[in-house]
Image (cartoon, helix red, strand yellow):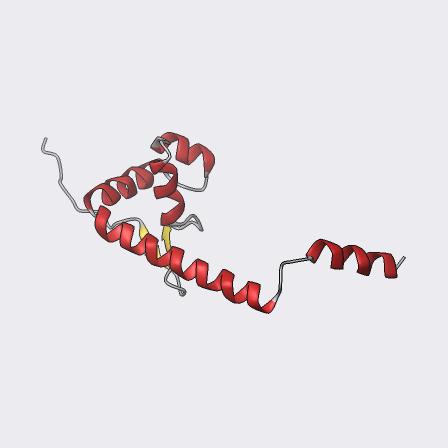
Length: 110
């Protein structure tokens, strides 16, 4: 009996916004890599995100280890996008005094 050596597709897919997700889940590559960098094992990551498949997490970790420079560049780009969105939101909706404004509005209505 011989072992069939086959290449399986990488369990990563980019959604319509360019966010890379693991398998057929909503869990992002960012999430898995961050957990791994924080010292979590593949098993611990699956415990934390039960929609993930253990084999997929192992493959994604292996991909990260082989393509670390590319993945890190993607993660930096995602962080820059998140920072820009946060700045835009804060410019549109000043976070200073939110609690006071909500309490004032609450006292006006009752």
